[in-house]
Image (cartoon, rainbow, N blue to C red; front, side, top):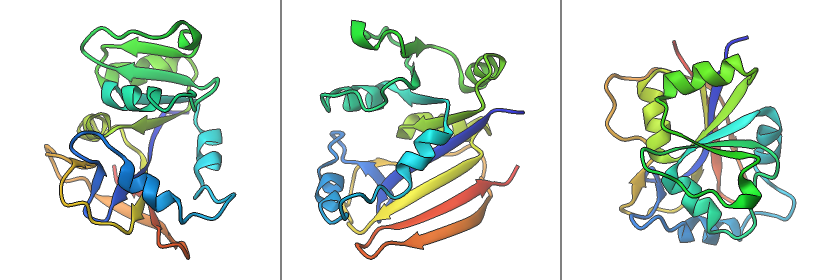
Length: 181
């Protein structure tokens, strides 16, 4: 089986995943409207992946939340600079300088089947390498005007096939797409 790379992410209506300073206050405010017990498919998605691949900015943001949310999942942090990994995370978090294609080859050889690709720049790099298989994007009903875009400059158009859309009563709209290879 070949390695599958998936995206599961929220954006503002205008396509931003964070404010310019990395703040997610708009997402935190929107999450107040989510009924208790509703996770918009996140737990099911997480149960389907073997490892997460994220960039340094995403790793630092997630690390700032206090408790590490990924428990015993393997996490690979892509960064061209050295990275300090706390002792309590060294058994599950690793740092890599590899390009997306080399990383995917290595993880596939190790027996990984599905990766969760997270963080704007990392997602953009994997898209440019043609390594994303599917995207689940939850649009939050807020326009923030500026910020970190989910999709930046691409080398080529990326054709998608829509597979599903779910509208939640609290205003979120989640669409899933397969990347057409």
